[in-house]
Figure 1 (cartoon, rainbow, N blue to C red):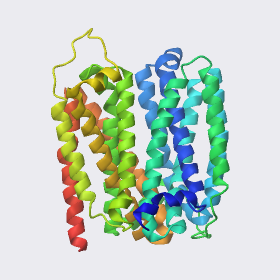
Figure 2: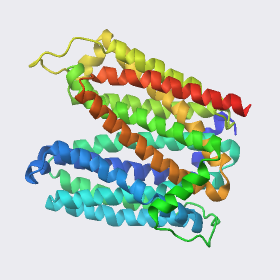
Figure 3: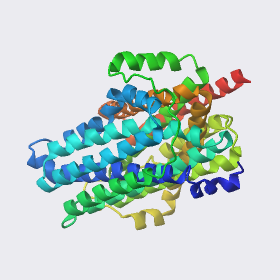
Length: 430
């Protein structure tokens, strides 16, 4: 597939309905999470008699937990049934779950909303293996880079727009009604778009659905581990999620305490990061011309590493004095000394897009067809573990007195080492 025809996939039934379904689902996840975090911080935390900071961190864990619990049965279902049917079931379940969210917002019940957050994580867990494993069934091998690039672009655009929309709407007058109604409506739109995903042949109709979570998960990892290229690609993807989670989690505090800016700058950083990853993901097809290879993954890792170190350097400035008025996005971006901060964030994100798309394509193309969903399920588990490590590691470092720019600095050498390891693997394959 030629790079110039990348967007032509969006004109095909074998890709467009999947793209729309994925975008709407990712939007709804982040729309709901952002609204819930804002509501907890400003209203529900105090009403529930619980420290809002504890609730916010607990909410992050509640959303990730299903990826550990349900990864094995999600993989089994994706192999036993037509993956397009499975996605339709999951999207219909999202309508029911979002109806619970609307009720939770209406009655201001934080515990019901936390239960809904867990169920949203669960439906994402069941959707993911079907989403990624259906791509090789609908796309030619030379279209996988383009398809994955579009999926990643759509995902990060959904994260950006969903996060901003949920945070802005929930605290407005009648915001709980708007958010609840839109969440249900978006879920219904996702279910409608899933109806047009072409059917696929079940991989293993006799597959038993295992709920022996630990045993089945270990079986999946034991199968994936000997496939060195696939296993290493999986771990390299999880490293990307660790790096991304580290940067995204620090943006609000970095903006306020290090740069002395208001929340509009933190939101702008999220926009820059999301757009950078989206553009990098799209650039993959132009660079690789549809060829599935990790040839340029080490260079992308080195780019992330160098830009991370440079970001630490340009962020080394005197602490913001207490009582100093916060500046807004317009004033911040109009100051020449802040150009390099913006540039570094964009380079980190752009290189992240170049880094991750080929790795997903390798997992999909190198794993046997009957095991692709299991590989994706394993990848979801390692992604969650790495993101949890990112959150815990950053908390520990901050408690030891490490500054946020210094946390960014740690991403430099560590990502450089990851790039060296991928490069070593490439040479061994050759």
